[in-house]
Amino acid sequence: MQVFFVNAKLAKRHMDSPVISGEEVGRLLDDRAIADGTPVYLDDETMMPIEPLCSWGRSLSDGELAEGTLKDYGRIIARVADFQEQRGRGVLSATESDLQAYKKVRTQLQTRPVGDVTWGKEAQLIDQFYEHLVERSVLQKRPRRMVVRGRRIEQKMDIRHLSFGQYRYFRDVGLGGQLPDSSVNRSFRGSAPHRNRAASDLALGTGMRWREWATVLLPELGIGVGHRVDEVTFTVQACAKYGKARTIYVPQDSMASLDPYLLIERPQQAAMSARNLGKRYRDLFVVSRIDHDSGLVHGMLDGIRREFVMSAMDAGLRRITVHETEVGLEALAVFICRGGLMPGADSWKRYRHAAWRRMVALQDDSTPPLPRRRWRWHDLRHTYALQLLSYLERQMDGDEPDAVARRRRHRSYLASHTRLNPLLIVSRRLGHQSPATTYEYLEYTDDLLYDFDEAFRGWVGEVGSEATYAQIAAHAFDLEKGRSA
Image 1 (cartoon, rainbow, N blue to C red):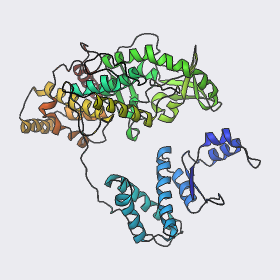
Image 2: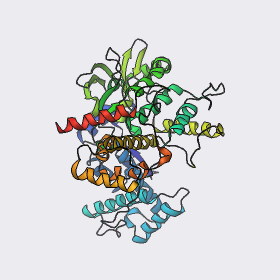
Image 3: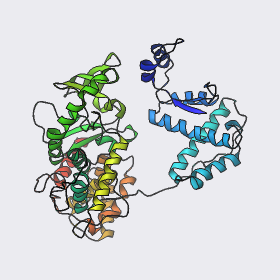
Image 4: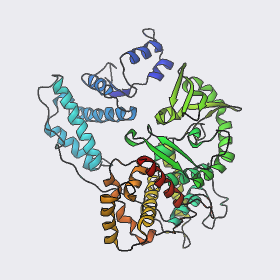
């Protein structure tokens, strides 16, 4: 069995059949509202659809799921079907014993066993698959549920944060290619150090998740409005977790960190890739007009004139968004790679791993201690949250070293100071679904190892810069006051 995934754009552009044209396939997919990413299961020999797997995949399409989610779900059921085939049985004849054996393979026996959280999601989908078959009268009964309803395993967040020295070592030596004494490393062979340094400063200075800062567009940062913008606010939604809209504040130093990249590296990358992007014109969303006041972009996509609100543009659309410049087509994304478009998850992972290898290789007595596990981009978000929460606490009540007293303060905040409660302010700035998630950071705000100067100078941008977490905190307070006005 093979599993494929619907891609209407590829079908329109590249399908060549005497029976049906690509355009006709595209119209059929649109007419039947079959979403991109819908799984299609075909027999290895005949390449004919396999039922009821294809019907189940079609039902997923009606759920308005993201393309990546549809693909993940399709692969999960394909694995179950392959497992059953290896045991000489079909997916429809699966018993409780079969599914328990499959669970053991996934959680214990395979080369990289999955954890409880991953298995819980996978098992729940398998339950839903067999429920679907019973509802459609394909099966009279289903195997015993693999997930106990109402049971939930609570797991603490893996909060990993950086000290000031660790962050500067990560940013300047790991990503920027410098030596530990800040001198130039002439043996450095990495690419785009200014881009990677600017990305880390943007992540730390805003608390955005990877998908949010890695997909940001130039107009969202006020670049191209015709005058210099020192700090900016914009809305994230489509690229935010759960599609939950929130306001992002980019402080002055994070904006200033972008300058070397925007003035030195990015123009060269854009010029080198302009010809290649020109050949892909039909596959791109070519923007002809940007309305900075309304946040609308207008252009051509698939031969149709379209307009989008930038906050509503998902990562896939942002990746193919370009505009005409004097050198040709140029991506509208802030961060681009050699191909001219924004780097994907694998690329950013590769940059981070290369940075870690440099950090380890150059570590000596003068460098900050490194943890057992290499950094994640998400650690910058955790660092932002801890520093902002600690600063807001100090602003509200001053220093108080007693950890018990600090937690007593938080109960007081919740009772009588909800609007300006530091915990709730940080929760909203991070876009957490529940303040309970943010509450886990309290465990770390009493850790003196990560104490910091009141102004928190010099983390983002260059040494001696004036923008601080005080600036970020003041803006957070202003936003909260605006909410209650």
